[in-house]
Image 1 (cartoon, rainbow, N blue to C red):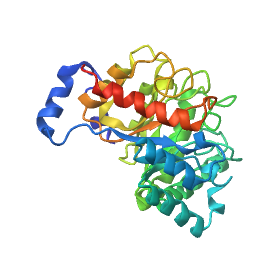
Image 2 (image 1 turned 60 degrees about the vertical axis):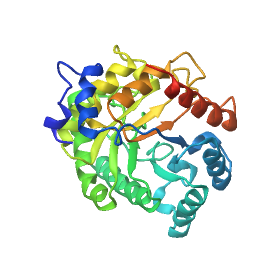
Image 3 (image 1 turned 180 degrees about the vertical axis):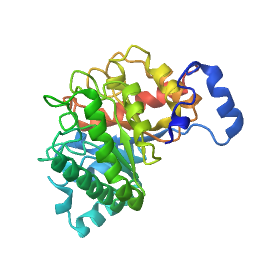
Length: 307
């Protein structure tokens, strides 16, 4: 996304209902917000994919987000037959593969901001491999969280880390373009990383990359550590927003904690958001079935409430 587009509405009047009115007027009543719900597959643990996908569809999800480590430690080891199988299993359940996340989790030798140029080159090449895997599954998004593999290491400051990250992403852009996949940069809590800990920092990096193949994801758990309310952040950064993670600051699913999703979903409606609302949890204690069912049930109930 070009900087001029991303900066639109991010200074001055970024929030509020008034900012959304021109969008609504331009789109018209039949081309507004759609609640496209997805769920992240690692929540299902060791369930076979066909069983997990069937439950997700039964609960009302339309998509599934895949963590590569649930398939293989290295995506280059995943044969074509396995890729085809996963895609067909999702399609048989009536689901779309939204994309991949936890991109570098449980891998070795990859790092977004590493001071060693050879590591950065390997990381860019692996992002290309992830893009091809994502495309093979029918997905269109790579969600870059991976806090450990982006942390600023000793002797690397934020400016240098940003330069390294821009270099890696820039080198991966041709592969992203060829696979028709977009990289979504995810601000994460300062409790788990020291790089890109606010939406503003992520947008700054995206502006430096300056490509429609690099955009923004917002995550409810991470947004809870920012000074602005969730709804304000959504409205402020709407021009670059391509994906959304729904969860609670307590690491469970929507509705399992104190975070009120009524204003959050209202903000997504106000900006005419058309991407995925993907349930990602980190505490699996309630079990996958309860997490999947109650998370989407709660969000649908929130959508039905007047705002």
